[in-house]
Amino acid sequence: MKKKQFMTDNKNKISAVAKLIKESTMTVALTGAGISVESGIDPFRGEKGLWAKYNPEEYAYIDAFYENPAKVWQMLKELLAIIIFSKPNNGHVGLAQLEEMGYLSSIITQNVDGLHQAAGSRNVIEFHGNNRWLLCIECSNRYETDPDIIKNIPPRCECGGILRPDVVFFGEAIPQKAMVKAYANAKSCDVMLVIGTSAIVSPASEIPLVAKDSGAKIIEINPEPTPLTDQVANLTIYEKAGTTIPMIVSELKKKS
Ligand code: APR
Image (cartoon, rainbow, N blue to C red; front, side, top):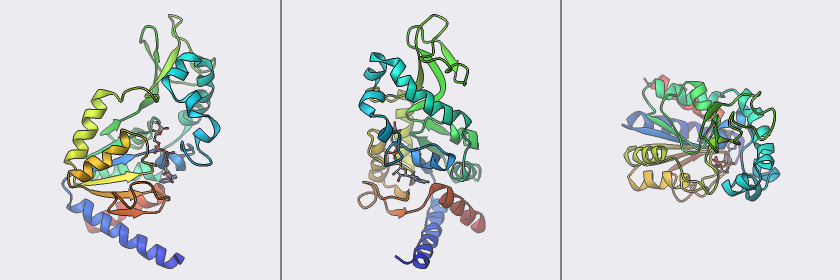
């Protein structure tokens, strides 16, 4: 497609999305690693993804963590060193503005980087936990994550137990509160923005399907197609989140 036509198409799509959001009584966003790429955090999949460097079988499963916490902590330390100093980008800020303007009810995020809250979003459902806290696997004591605590890996609790991040490893259940809230939101929304997720990791990948089955319109923002694109999404904007979300905000400001 020629660049000019692509831009016109995108502009039309942005207007259509703004109109849908404006008419909706409840809009919810589901976000994935892609929204944080413009904050310097690599996604999980693809050439530059974390799983291209670290085999998830060896690093992402809870059994792998218990078998060799020091090994898994090498990856976690590298990831946390980036996350701790990362800042929200225009995509995160745009979603916070949508909430502030009364257009976004909640964000269900698969991300563990806390950047939605850092941008000012208040109603954030952390589906895969977060990296702000470390938990002792022996006594469940909690520590706030900071560069000092992860200097020596694996980090340890005062009791001597190994600490783990408060995230959901593969092989673990989604925190029940997050699960219940996310599904309730998916069932009641009439627009769902699906942003920066490959939509292949269950159960998060089922959230747009639940929303669609309950009658919601599904809007995808992703530079690449996903399994949702032709099957589930009513409309896909093939662009970066940090470019697209501010354009939707501007369009809504124009019309309000
Ligand atoms: N804006 C929007 N989307 C983007 C951008 C961007 N700037 N850059 C990349 N993307 C898209 C990619 O095209 C891809 O579809 O973001 C998606 C990222 O996909 P994944 O790396 O698979 O991340 P995610 O969907 O969040 O992964 C789900 O898998 O490993 C687990 O627990 C981990 O929560 C994670 C889950």
